[in-house]
Length: 432
Image (cartoon, rainbow, N blue to C red; front, side, top):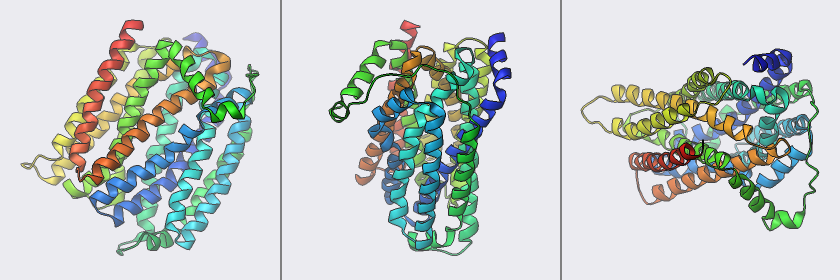
């Protein structure tokens, strides 16, 4: 504990700048997605929402899968601050292009730029998360992860509410029949994205370089194309069962959370009578607030070690809430306003359970990774998590196309929690 506090005191200033970079990165990435997602919510019916919203979310995730090997290799091969700096610069250029699309009312192009914005995030990700151990050393992993989780989730929480507020502010009370008309009216919001991206880019110059061991492995294009690196990285990850099952624990949650984010807007509009994008996003933001609370509780309980009991408590809370959300939204004997409060509370508790579970799982993954292979492990973690999320999102699209409504999709989500967490927790209990 003393070593952990000593590292934090010594490097508090640099770590604070790093947290600012993380905050702005998450805030900007979310902003554009919120604009497009709110447009879908305002214009389309339940079935179309359940198709387009998962597709939008999948576009955010696909680059993390396709660039799994490259992003991990870059993080292990080069200084992480350099990668963060160039990625932030790319975000400035991309947000300028997005702002142009807004002013032109080019909805399909703006939708497509979600993929490009996600591409720079995919390259960014292993470097920015790998920097935690580089800056705070192994002794500061638990508390460092807690701070990073809190800051990132605060950015998502505030970004969700802030950009939804701007969206409604520029739209006013007038009704719109096309997504193109909506983009025309919210176009000035694009300059907010550009400005924040520029601040993020400038902040990366304050992130300090620390001496670290870099990988000397050269990237082979042939091996990249034939998925040799992907297979090898997965094999390495599987060799450490603690890392392997910890990653799957996080993957199950993030897969469920993506399903929840994709389905709740349609559920709220049809079952709970919610018509405001700000209101529905505020509901979803409660899960982020819950994750922050859960992460704080988990970090305090961890002290200088990883508490496995936090994983069990968190996963149980997630599962119970996942079961109760569709139940509460279909109770015919209570008014919509009461059902809305109950569902919102369950979403909050869902997040609390997630925060309690994710902090120790992420700490286990980083603590058991080799120093010169951490970037690849984190990229592998991203790949598995994103495959789980994309898989569930595509399944949501297929169910929606088959006319399965939002309530039954959420019941399926709950079943995944029961089966998935039961399996993972049994395996972790046997090896920890």
